[in-house]
Length: 75
Length: 136
Image (cartoon, rainbow over all chains, first blue to last red; front, top):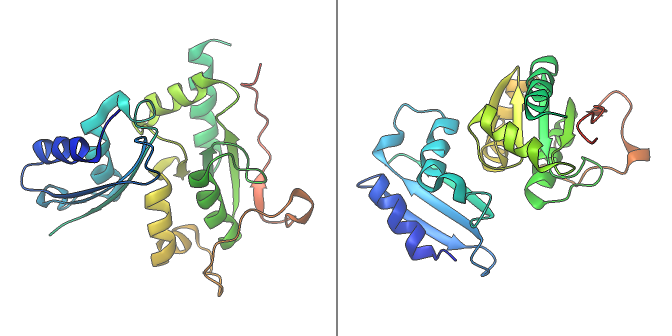
């Protein structure tokens, strides 16, 4: 079962320099919310920004990670 | 029904419906909080939209994500283009961008209500019934 720290670290290593906050919404280890601030999002549409974050977890979203709510912004 | 038929059906639904929502459950009976909020935003704007429940067959979701490159449900398409899931749609709704995109007026009461009961659904607005041919 993934932890908030694990999710945070994986987003940070995929998007170097990003500021990442991850919350476990239900405490059950499967509904998360990630707030990500990264330079990488500059010039990208919201869809493209969220896909970058979803892309870190691949098939795990919808499986082990039942739900991942995302909020992205640039610094 | 073959997987390719499912994908073709989904592709067609996206192309044929100006506003197409894929969700868990139906606008009348959403089966997930994220789907409830997303269909609630469309209901609050009073726009017509087509909605398809992905739950009857796991392959619907699988093929839809393959098509859109988006892993989660709900997924909202406008004009054949993926606009986003719950987070993006709600953010756009709150900023008034969704109303603008759909040519709708922002409601004065900004609280999003759950979908009305089927009997209360306005005739000219609300979901367009889309026959779920995938449930076979």
